[in-house]
Length: 275
Image 1 (cartoon, rainbow, N blue to C red):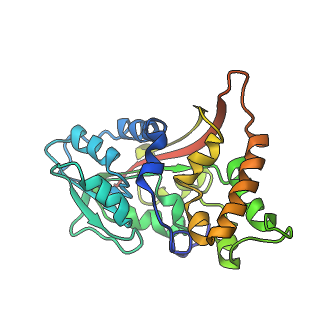
Image 2 (image 1 turned 90 degrees about the vertical axis):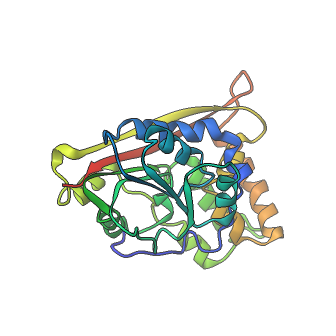
């Protein structure tokens, strides 16, 4: 991981709330498990950094009904979907690189967001610096950079063109060619100087998602990891890419005998208390 911040992975990315929520139950489960491990009894201010459609932010508000709950996201489309249902939650449009709270927060929660941001050696301590003493930082991030779904994404960009050459720009290829998230033990090293060792809880889980339909892994990544690719290609390149990528994914994730597809998905969880 780099020690500096780089915005390139999200630059120009367009988000589709409907596509994202096609697998809403599967996407919600890790957030629920992360939330269950935060022991703060009565926070005054809770922030959901990268709130997306707001479904998880509402769970935070239910867990701590007396708290001021704020949902932060850089996508206007996602925030519009979040605000469509009335609630006392405050929705704020902001880039995670630039956002800083008006005052320290008691719980800073971020589910499946920081994988889009590089420089975790700098970013994670910066976020912990926004947490009040005795407060909690809770993170969940995909650990699937080496999985077939993401390896084949990069390979198809590199050689999926009509002549066997690359699709998209050199910048797009470079943005996807660096591991998005470190191995779990690295986050212990990052946080050890900020938190007491007994106040750091790090674990990983590999979910075996059982998916229905045609090319379900393509449909899954269309809502998340594939967004920068789809936003970075023109219409012709996008169609060419999706045909080649779907073909490769069918071989990597074949249908089972019952017609369904098993999609392993590895995630890392971090819950840490500021000393």
